[in-house]
Image (cartoon, rainbow, N blue to C red):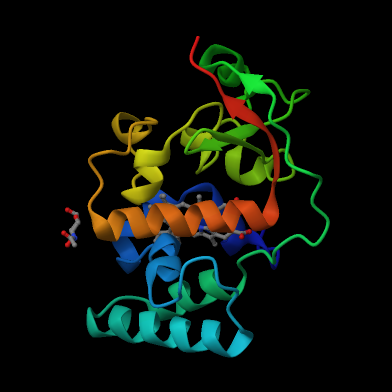
Length: 186
Ligand code: HEM
Ligand SMILES: *[C@@H]1O[C@H](CO)[C@@H](O)[C@H](O)[C@H]1NC(C)=O
């Protein structure tokens, strides 16, 4: 029942449910402060978490949840394969949306296709971030939105803040996931 990981499972599989409760997204953590593409030290992350926890507490919400969520962000991978440039059409991409557990899961950002197969608990069918699977949902990432209507490739409507958020996600993915191709219009 209450395995040590149960709260984590809840967070990672149903972020939208807790979003209202704590009023902060982990995406926001990436957007705060840090220069684009720069690696943050543990100290910087701690400072950032404190900052967010403070603002969350100020709103009378559960800062501890935000703190816990931030502290368990997965570490960057050290072993990435050379990026591939293979063309992948949107309809091909849509087959890698996690609905078939025997297939890889892909997430595209700004047309680059990342292999997130290692994280079925986040991107798999019915999971919290499945909305990003099998497509390029750059706009939604920039908006910190899990709405289907925002899960589209055209991010031209994003403002500067949202562009920063999108760029932070791009950098997050670059450090963790292999690039398996590029989205090519049908
Ligand atoms: C308060 C609400 C939220 C909570 C508590 C939350 C929680 C988390 C946690 C714990 C992780 C880290 C998982 C890991 O690294 O293993 C994560 C990652 C992530 N979150 Fe959220 N999240 C929230 C809202 C959102 C929203 C609104 C978005 C929409 C863009 C979002 C997008 C993501 C993405 C793309 C990842 C990266 C997953 C990965 O590939 O590891 N989150 N979230
Ligand atoms: C960008 O849009 C978001 C959401 O509407 C808003 O909260 C933010 O203040 C805007 N930022 C800028 C720099 O216009």
